[in-house]
Length: 547
Image (cartoon, rainbow, N blue to C red; front, side, top):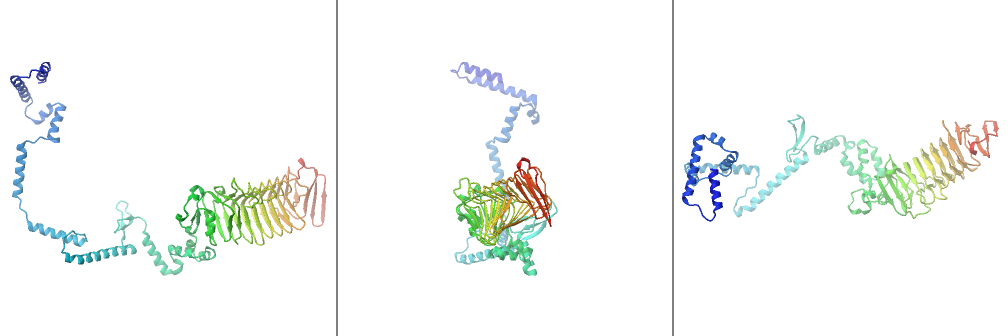
C-alpha cells in the first residue's frame, strides 16, 4: 500500500502537468481493497486481535475517533432522536402530585422563615410588610438575648480527642475555653453574693479612672486583692514614645489614651501618683527642662539604664513631696547651648528616691545634682554622678537638705565629689568617690555626715574634710574605709587601727579619736582612747603618699 501511494506521488511529482486518468485511480483502489481483504483474512474479526495488530499510532487514532471526537452518521442521530420521542410519549405526568409537592415545599419554606418571591395583591402589601418586620425584629431580639445571656453556648464533646468544648449555635464558633460572656455572668453572680469585695475587675477598672492615683487609688488598693489588681492596672500607666519610633513626627490628636510624644506632655498631664513608663530609646527634653510638682514615678529599664536615655537641655526641678525614678540615664546633648545649669534640683521640701540611674553633666557647667532647702531629701541606691563643670561639685546638699546614698559612685567631677553645707546631712554607704578634682567629701557650716565602708580613690585634694562647726561619724565595719592616693596636707580618718599598706589609708573597726596627718615623709599618728595618748613619729611613706 505504501509502495503504490509512493509510486503514485512520484509519478505526479515528475509530471505535475498531466493529471492521472480514471483507470489509474481505479487500479489503486482495487489494490488497496485487495490488500485490506488479505490483512482481514489473516487477522480475523475479533476486536482484541484487530487492536493488537495495529501500530501505536493507529491505535491512538482509533481511540481518538471513538472516545474524544467520535463520528456519528446521520442515520445514528435520527434513530436516537426517534427513541427519545417514543420514551417521552410513553411517560404519564401526575399533575395533582406535582401541585401537592409544591404546597408542601412552600409550607416548609414559610416555617423556616425564608423570604419567598411572590406576587401578592397590592392591598395586602402594607400588612405583609408589617408582619415581615415584626417577625424579623422578633428573631433579632431572640438572637441578641441569647448572646447576652450565653444561651447560644453549649458544651459538646470532641469526637477525636473525647474532650469537652464550647459551641455557639448562632455563629458556629467552637472554643476550648469558657466563653467570656459566661465568665462575666459568673463574676456578676459572685459579686451579688459577696458584695463589694468580689466586684468584677472590668467594673472596677471603669471606676478607678475617676480617682486620683495618690492617695485615693492607693487607698482603694488596700481594700482587697481584687481592688489592688484593678487599681494597678496597666491601662493607667502613661507611655511615652521614643524618637526612634517617630515620636517627634506623630500627630498628637491621633494618639491612644495615655500615650504621649514626649516626656514634657506626659508630665504636664500627670496627676498625683501617676506612673510614666519609658521604653528603650532616646527622649529629648528641651529648654527650660521639666518642673515636677506632683508625686509621680518615672520608670525606665531597671536592668540596664543605658537603654533609656534622656537628652536633657535645662534642668529637672523636683518640687513635689514624693517621687521615684528608676533605670534612666540623663545626659546632656552633644550640641547643648545651656551653661551653668544643674541636671537635677530637688527644692522646696521636695523628695525623689532613685535607683539604677546615671546622671552625666559632661558638656555643661555647674553641679550635677543639687538638694536644697529644709525638708528636701532623697534615698538613692546604685546611682552614678559624674561630669560636673568647673566650679560645680558632683552632689551639692545645702540649706537643710539630706541625702542617703548607697552602692553609688561619684566620679570624674571638676570639683568636689560630695559637698554638704549649711546644716545639711549626708549618709554614704558602700559607695565609691574617685577621680574628682577636689575633695572626696567636704562638710561646711554645721553639716554632718556618716560614712560606712566606702572607698575614696585618687581625689585631687582630700578624701574627707570638715570645718570646725561640722561633724561626721565613720562606722567602718569589717573592711573599713579605703582611701587611695589622696594627696593632702591635712586628712582625717576615724578608726582604731591604721595600717601602712602600699599607697592608701586602711582602717579597721573604727572608734572616734584617731587622726592621721601627713608631714613630708612622716606620719604623725595619735591614738586617743580613754585617758591614754600615744604619739609615734618617723614612719617613712612609700612614694610620698599617705598610707
